[in-house]
Image (cartoon, rainbow, N blue to C red):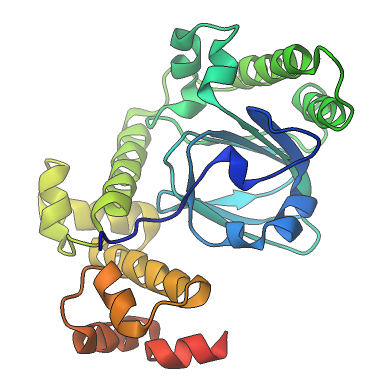
Length: 286
């Protein structure tokens, strides 16, 4: 059996009457109630926009944790692993869209040039809570999605395009080189970790893939995330173990195998060391 990766959710995972479309829009507070599994780490095969209007919390994308606050807009590309922790008062809008939905009218070169979809820029834009341009467009996207018309797709795509174009204006043409490089390397590390955590668990493995020394990677993680690279590796493994123990019926030995452990007893010791309890005890607490 092939080990499982973090779940990659498709648009079909979020059914919305009356018909399936290559786009989706919902209030954040409604979405997290209808689909509680999105609180666990996962990825998508589509683009995602998140606009926060009230409340707060944190949003972790490829290892980096960002603050959620009113006026913040997040931009995710297909394949990025993320999860959030929201306060009870958090409100906002979510927009999903397939690549082909954008490309039906607008050139691919533009989609791939947006700064917030590039690894060298942060995937979040912090705007004033009362900014007058982008928030009304998210409200229009939501209203359009709720009341479909014959030309709904075209109108929705137009509002989406305006959101992306206006957001792009807020990004600096040349971010600070040092911050840019550090954030880019951390996000690359996160992407590699999400791909290889079942088979690679040493800092030197990832340092080699990043063309860095192990000491440099550790120093980078400490400076940007205040954690060692090895701690991040263990956290990623434990996060996936907790997900499998919480949301699957796999036995402990099967979970161990899914995570690349050949010896189930070693997995139990590993889990106890880094999670502070045994897999069985963790599952019973759920």
